[in-house]
Image 1 (cartoon, rainbow, N blue to C red):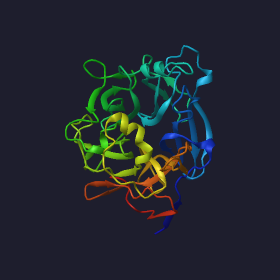
Image 2 (image 1 turned 180 degrees about the vertical axis):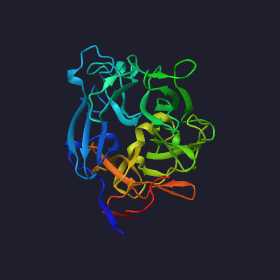
Image 3 (image 1 turned 90 degrees about the horizontal axis):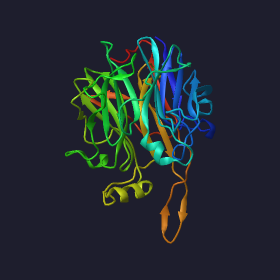
Length: 356
């Protein structure tokens, strides 16, 4: 029996030129492909949707642009920020979700108002991708779209925007299969009974089917950046929290002062986590080096201490990088050890069973 191992240290990528937010990884054959939000993230449009590739999950190479903003016409309806793109394999083709809206540099209001989910398809993971949803999906600001195709071939789409949303989707037609053609609400940040760590906002859904249930991972930015999980018996719910506390993430009060003050929860009590990150979140799940479920997301390192009238821990605008961790299911719950920032080793036998 052959024993194998994988050594890694977070952040996986360290080169500013490889910086992305909201990482999404898909394995095709023996190669992994990754996309995510390119810089600049918050101000004006960014360059488009980038693709990276790797044979070992550690060294990543440029695989080109799936969408290059400079090549799009000025009036293109999805020429905007290109937030959180994802690639999913379904029905033998590759489906790309892109979250964007038309706008020009400095026109932040319009970028947000027209921000929609756009669906593209290709026969190869590297493209070229063709637009399927010519008008975008849903109404109003929608973001962080993700796809899930069940064993029966039916597909579903989940997204964020003032909460989490869902719909069954006809991929070929790029059409939501709901009564009014719009997304249906799953959960809002301040629904009765929600734990306090969700009240700031929730985003970044990602769905899988494992162990006889459907699971919807999501991120919340109230105390830092933390990942929770919803569970259901159907791809359209009803959904309930798997557990009251996050399964992964970091808490750093100084990094969320502005949002907490504006959101009215600056008195929320919690302790900072003992790690060097101010963000670890917006996860997607992929087949890792051992053939099992792994979690990928972006992490953001702490900056330096700055002395003002009082000692205040501030955080520099460092670049987000790729973060990887094994995803474990133990006694009916998901677990992620970490976040880790020292060398880690994962060992397995080649004959080990894969994900159920």
